Length: 146
Image 1 (cartoon, rainbow, N blue to C red):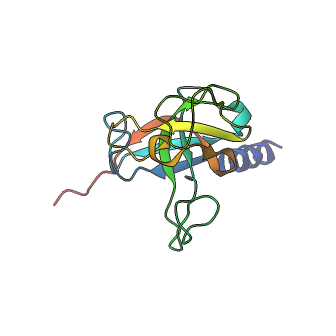
Image 2: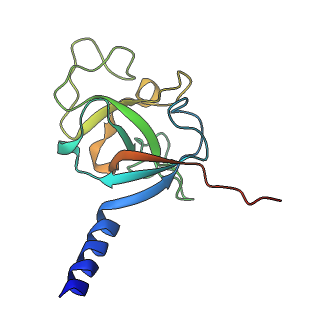
């Protein structure tokens, strides 16, 4: 019986948690290129302002699908949530006018690095492209000693 319980626990962890490698410096200084993070799969309803999330960006060209993934599969973004559905759209968000609210099923995100490509350039991100929230930084993988 103990083995069955352990097997169920392993399956739950594998389906609810994923390790993601960070590429680029959009979240610097909090996260840097090469860092690995543990991401807990979460629906949009469980995300809070200030959470760091992994998600697909909105499409920016005809080469991309509905979640901004190009034909090579690239496109996951790591960003900080600044506004949730129903919140006022923050100033500087692309495509938003004064007094607008974040639509249902969307969120506004920004990278910690001011040079980040985020909602300031792409507008609201689709909540359907949300992988989950970052729960822990593991750091960069170790390189073998030479």
